[in-house]
Image 1 (cartoon, one colour):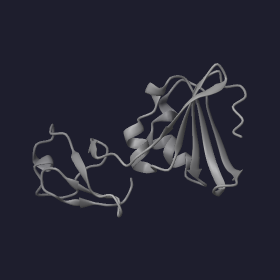
Image 2 (tube, one colour):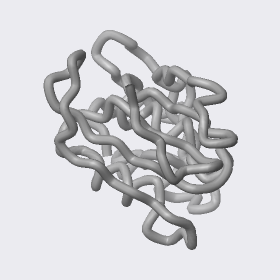
Image 3 (cartoon, rainbow, N blue to C red):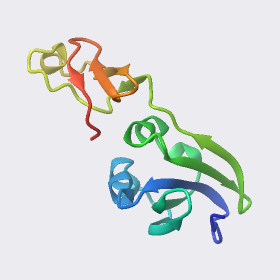
Image 4 (cartoon, rainbow, N blue to C red):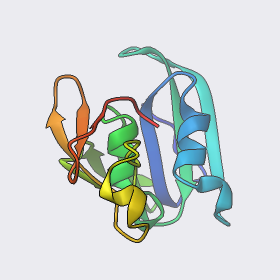
Amino acid sequence: MLNISGLQEGIVLDHIEAGKSLDIYYHLGLDKLDCQVAIIKNARSSKMGRKDIIKIEGGLDIVDLEMLGYIDHNITVNIIRGSNIAEKKRLRLPKKLTNVIQCKNPRCITSIEQELPHIFYLADEKTETYRCQYCEERYSEYI
């Protein structure tokens, strides 16, 4: 059972692949927030062997679930209210990403038109491959 002592209201990101919590911390911009964030590295897990956990004080609006689903859709998001797990959210690979990744194709319209949003759609769920909406450029590695 996940220990959530000390967290009255907030979010616990559980089942993070061991060693990946700091990547997630920076990609979600948690370093720029003015709230308490606790990172637990290499916690024992019967399901995964070892895992990381991130506890974040505050509301769900702090975490970009689209970005988190893209980084690792196997993470469990626990919503804490009154020191108890009030809700569990399972992440999925987003069908569409807007301004999360950028097209690397120099001939893409997004390279010329700077104000255009970078939109990618999920082309292959098995290989976790995304393609640019404008030029079909393939993108298959996470940030």
